[in-house]
Image (cartoon, rainbow, N blue to C red; front, side, top):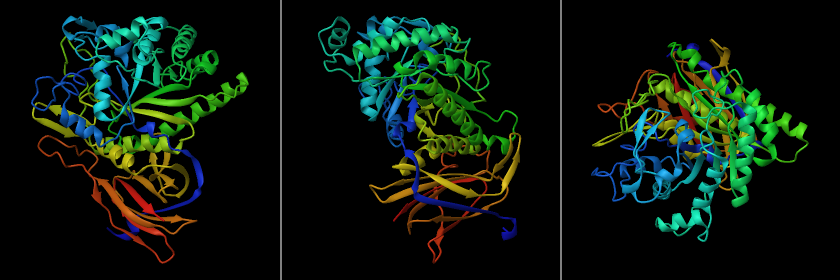
Length: 498
């Protein structure tokens, strides 16, 4: 390519210019009773690829590479009509139920105890959601009792009788799901939900003061009550909750790739709006307590939208096939969470297996989709503190306005005297020459991995490695500046040591 056709990008940072420590829980996941996420996904008894508990070992192996610190369960829309007691006790005695949310049949063969065992097998921690749609605050408190209290009370003794003598010690609890949405079982106005959430959180923390609770925020930015709902909930519950949820799903239904690849700008705007709301409510409450953002549903989702399971068991629902432009959007979500590390403390990729997921299963194996790789690369590289980054970049014209050609984040970890820098190159036509200067340290690049493909390229069962990481060459000038050429479009994750 002619050098005159290149974008020229300059990135400057200083390892003392820090935003906040990165909370590793931003690399969380989400498992809902929806489609084939649980059944034929993580849980497939009788499969030769499953262990004696029915857990798919190939799925576990793939997810272990992502090292998700938390996994949210059991929903999602599903939880708003779920009776948790249906999913415990002898499997043969568990009732089959119609699922209001996805018009499916729930067998309840996989429930709370199975999920806890699966989390242990994966090496993650459970993040439980309680039913505040059709359920009562007292039901939510009983689930805390079942999971977290020692033997000696009626509900905790049920857990012991079910073969689990020790408490599970679940620390994160979602107070319902998307209760601002008319599609939600038990949907109520903001004030009614806020009163319900306050009672539930008080009861739950009364049983176990060590837990943290997450109130429902707006289910997406286009809701007519966006931020008004959130303000009502926060003003009522501020001192009794620890996080507020935010959800967003992105899509390219108009096939406008340039605008689609600017999604990170929109995610930044959403987080900035929540930052302002948190500061406002904290000020008017005159409170020293802080509430943070739990971005506990995020992903690309726009192709497979039918949520009607036809009253089948484990119907094929929402099995999105992802391409490379989707992967670049997912990378920008993670960039936004890192850039706002002082506000975003939890985030959950929704979901993890089969349903809008990085991993797909069939009876003979699994497929890693394109969106698997940005998550894997960043999870492996990020630790320590998020840094403030200065970027000089040309801009691209998009539907939301002019946006920088690149989206850049960086972290630094003093304990290992090293850090990482991730760049998403948004332009699909012109490569970019990038120069990186770290003002206070001379560093050595230890690895540089790039994801690059045509925007519409997908991994498939016939070509499972069409999208995946490769090494990218870098050079270091005499003055310590790092130079690289980014193909269009791409993501590079560079790791460095001092």
